[in-house]
Image 1 (cartoon, rainbow, N blue to C red):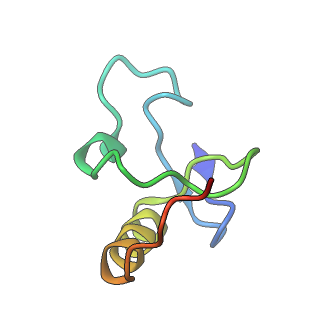
Image 2 (spheres, helix red, strand yellow):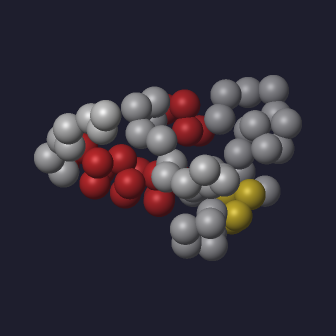
Length: 64
């Protein structure tokens, strides 16, 4: 089991638990990175909220 660093919820991660199956997160778009260099996986609820917030916010121009 993994613990979400954002909300503290416990959840299963196929990669962390070394399961021979795709992780639940593969159902989400692969375009949103979890912020932070040392960030670990977020739980399904936090990842869904983060993706929704990114999709609803105006696009920011790329940095140089």
